[in-house]
Length: 523
Image 1 (cartoon, one colour):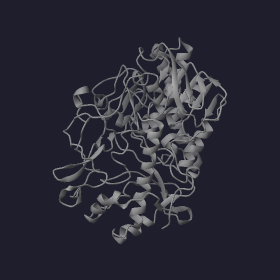
Image 2 (cartoon, helix red, strand yellow):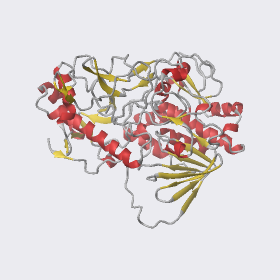
Image 3 (cartoon, one colour):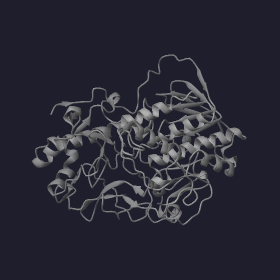
Image 4 (tube, one colour):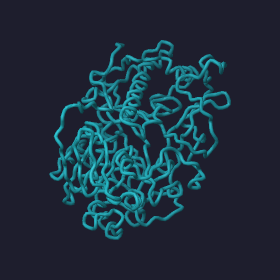
């Protein structure tokens, strides 16, 4: 296999020549959406369809977030609670494949649907504009300015980023990391060792020289204390790229050695494979036309555990370093599996059958452009969704849509416990019923901001967010944010002042599903 690099290096931090003099440009709209994620796209389309002029501002050169960046095997939960534009998306994808709906799809098909939606006459899209500062008067955002000097003014702003960057610069309260269980009287928050699916089920020695703690820990193992159940910290669940793979030789780009490849990064995996475990491809779900959506599974896989802590609140340069480190780790992982002669031949032979799909992500060297930011900042508003909501202990009366996926947290750290390596942080607990997402959780406190909506970094605890953080849910909350923006514009402009009864009628009129029993019945 050749040694090389991607012809056009995939990058999070797109370098702009900011030294050139720029004219002062002001973009005026009714609604300004920052972040062209799936949530941002549905928010924009909904507001535009209701007659409002919408500006969509995106940090990168791509739209669609994870839905258009490799997450083709949709995490749906209960499909009965997916309505409105979210359901329409899967119908539009299905139309391409000649079916009524399609839930597993190729990334470029998702991108084509979103691009078509964004062609709405009331929507203007601005790519590669990085947020620099926010101007407020009192509790109201007047505008935000990007690093290239463009000022975006609007009556209502929507932060649809995975990180909550606009929300943070607007002075809205937020949390990062895992709350202690005592904070919201939860059980599944904080440090967790209970789930076996993504942990080492065979003994693996953690030290560079087996049995010798003085030799130091293998790459990827933290020297942090293991912690006790439920203990809070600032850690977040691991990120990865959802790679679109294929075994079709005519459409396959083989894995090659990255310039900064280091086999020492995979010594732990080598020992695990030699202990009899090879499950790297166990969660490689089929997509149309011979492709797959490869996701993390097991003790050691594409999740770069412990490498993302600086992302949620990091500056752009910090995020670029983390982004490139994740690319290097993941590209190196698959090269290691295909080429390292210390591995059993069957492992190398099987791994070599796979490669990147040549007709996907053609503008980013066939590598998915969006890092899977499973968790960034989380707003703290008047209502914080907790595991009690997911377990059906509370009844909410201001629903804007429903989530139904299990409380799903990927691992947060890899440590030594009782002389062996262990992953920590994985939780998978199914809700009893679909979870209503309250309007109070997608808008800030009145005292902090009156014209901002936050449909992605919603007000939730770490573990409750694990159920909400799925792409269909982000489409749902994005659409509801678009309706809320419309209601606020019809009123006095404050998102806290809209009438929920009127809002509820409008949401149902737009196809949103707000409650089990009233809107749907289980089949």
